[in-house]
Length: 406
Image 1: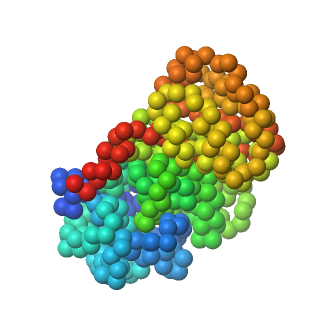
Image 2: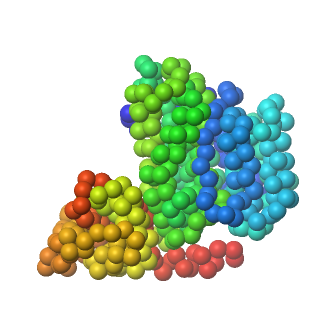
Image 3: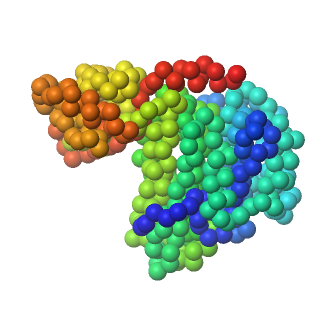
């Protein structure tokens, strides 16, 4: 497997574009992905009981129809808590794309992100679909435009592509995502779209995605809020020409590894781009007796506001980390825990067997001053491990969210 330049247009047969449709002022706000060849679809969605209209629309396709040709995305308005009218607008959007491409409306996925509770400007949405169709391109630049168009409070675009050899053929996976705030494990205010030219059964496509999401998007947190619109879609059009993957063989394992690489990269980019964030905060729990225990401990630390504030202040306040582990619900012996801080500036053991090592505060501050900081907790119970990603908590997070609608 190797990382290559590109995003959602890197795989054979996929085209995309992003445009300004007038939903937001002077910004790109609509994107489209299209494959002339029919795609098998897999999806995962928000666990929030309050689900946006596009989530319901896409669930019907991913779990029912299981095939699609197109994805239409808008930013600026979430189309959440909009009742039957909002769901009707999903249908109208899909019907407009279906009319232009000569396909069925139930082969058009839709996604939205932005302010909750407002009806989408359907006339602008449909005009945007018409505007995008002739501009669709398989170029890397077109993929980047799509990645930029789905941003809300994001400060950077998020896209990646990789190649892997399956059955003697070069298979490509490309992805883009958005997410900056309202991010919490069990899907976040995030949209993620991954395209691939792999030939793989829909059942294994869904299985690979579910497993990958558990170790990537479900292991990030910015602010503890789980959104109404979280959507991750994986489309496979089979254009690489590899032998169809129908069993969990070596090719399936390689595909799953490549998919997880893409999703983990995008997840970390979202965590690092948390609203107001100045650094990526990674938490590794090692030496756990089970994966479940490691996941619980890592998530508890990465979501602790006191720990996140300490990371912002470059303060090696390890008591907050041990405390967060203690209230996680996972059982462990705090008097056996070793804790390290690590970054590009070095690695430092902070506590050993639950007590301070007498470390240098100056050295700890230097390590915590980097753009990416890792806390490693060894609970010395077994061989299981897990990694979670988040960011520091800054003054700007409050400013951004206090002014979100103004």
